[in-house]
Image (cartoon, rainbow, N blue to C red):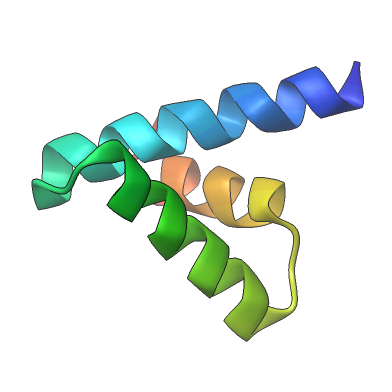
Length: 56
């Protein structure tokens, strides 16, 4: 389902941020959430952009 796909993308992006930026899970989620609000885009769109930027 669409919701499951969004959750998977967000989980992958969180993992990437945790590895790349040395933050914990809560902080990685908060960063995605913050970017989502700032850009007025869904968290999945932000997660997809993070993954795309890192070639995942």
